[in-house]
Image 1 (tube, rainbow, N blue to C red):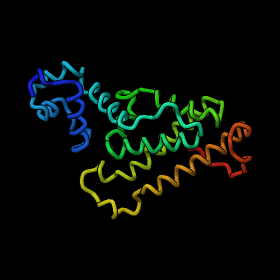
Image 2: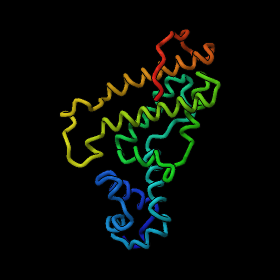
Image 3: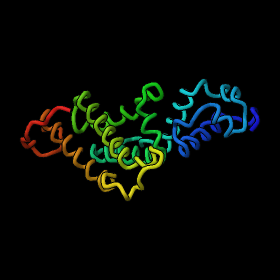
Image 4: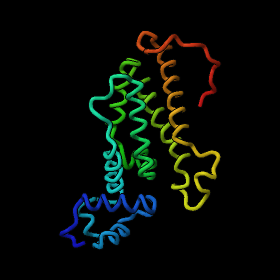
Length: 208
């Protein structure tokens, strides 16, 4: 591809193909230039550096499964939807598990804001809502690491050979358990807003 035929969109698409097929560690400006049959310096007319490229492909991956506007009115349904959309992103692009968690490469807070707003019916404490949102994100990423381990590492066992591999059923059950816990914790802060029955007393958990 000649430098005149290059575009930012073509560069981002090619970078995603490389990351999908070979892993994010294989992505470099030189490897990308080879993929596009162009000069390395031609790429810098469209992306400032590799960090900017990783930011661009991470945003493109997330944009394939955007959070809808408006969010579902029911907070549980909103959290389920956010979790499933993130699951789709990570299953399609396993490298996004890493890049979307890197402040150096991705600092867009719009999804966090969406989740905090969607939790307004559960709690009017923004700090608690933020903690809940981070908990959902962390849960999805953790299960995806279990689910995608064989794609994140070269070689290794086949998925069906690992007794520890998380399935989609595991994902759904764990998510519902997490949402139940969020409802209980919110009820302890304000039962009238929690949308859940009065909290039961559980043994004190060991701090993480």
